[in-house]
Image (cartoon, rainbow, N blue to C red; front, side, top):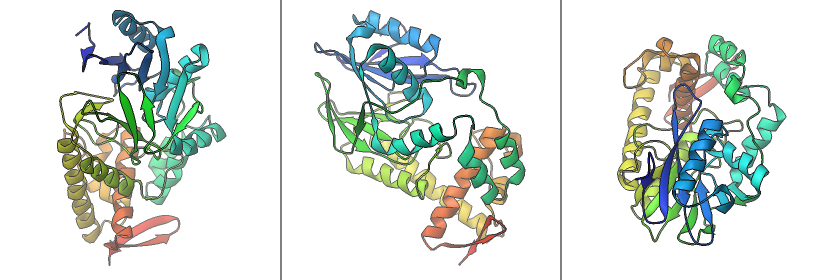
Length: 333
């Protein structure tokens, strides 16, 4: 250990970096060192305290920013990707990202001043017009303004191999949390950089996409099953402890969503017709809070999570859906 950093192997170091967010305070960046240069995985938010912490960690490991030759990101959310964009623009190292993230990057550039443009429409379809209005009124926070964002130098596809000198990272497409989320499998090291696909304590939200794919929950569950087909490995997530293994956590998350699908389906069968009505009957977070006890953004993610479960149940033929006045109503078949 060096300060707050954690040595994973002789070549790989986990560096927790501060975030400017009120609910999510730390992201794990990973430094992969080699004689030919440094690879960074998920280098965090373009935020001065984060940049300073990463620079200090590099120096403690015997490197400088000029030794970074490539940056790879599991997805395009700012807490994983934006410092990579900033450093690429400033210092010229190669920046890599999953190809399917191009949809959300393009969508952002079409509406850069709107915080959650797609979610407003989805909330109206979910029977939550007042919540949609509240989300539509949101403005960027000061720390969210002028964040470096854009396309990478290289788009990554499933099966691509990144030669980091001391490690060979195999790209695995794991859509769900975002449409273009990828993880990096270090086969020789029996470890996997899982980004937000596998987190040790929570299941990632699928409600923050600018250009969501069809049935993102189905994509997420399929991606969990992909991990279960790959060799078990040490889980190196973007948030939280590095002590878990991929198979155990992926299986827990599959079971969580199976349980949630049953609960959502039961509420729809009992007469809750919209995602908002179902979400209002459920309890949220480990504190078992009601929907109206959550802040506006967490209410949004809760309702849209329920919507994703209802949509999957409908796609499986377990629920029927009709649209009335722009609102999706679900019922038993």
